[in-house]
Length: 147
Image 1: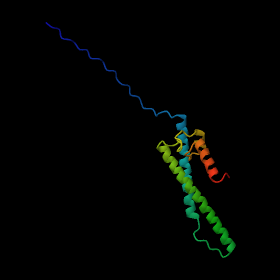
Image 2: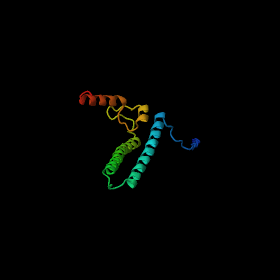
Image 3: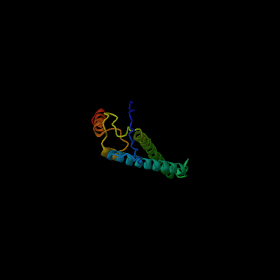
Image 4: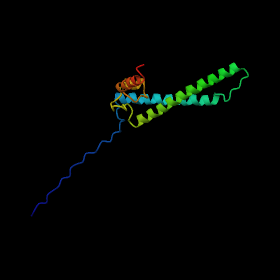
């Protein structure tokens, strides 16, 4: 009589289920997240100021005195120029937040190298590393006649 081969089943080890931990952020990633929070705060502040300007800026200014009229118009134009500059900054902030979200943030548009962390902290909306920006400014200076 032939003996039947006995097949031993291996005991399967139970997989440990542990709570997934959030991935550790590199120091640079932490800086980038801090920059993003600062930019979001700046954006909120700029939008609030723009809304306040719209609500408080007088429409047509009519003063009987020509001097008062000129002063009021000058003040109004100054405020509008200031808000226009803030509008351009707001656009740069929005673009920077988009770059952070798409992971293009911190990469030089010119050479493709990583922009230094200190430069990003000082000027988060920059798109050039210090070397490329210096070269660009030098070329502009030469093009303007060496001023």
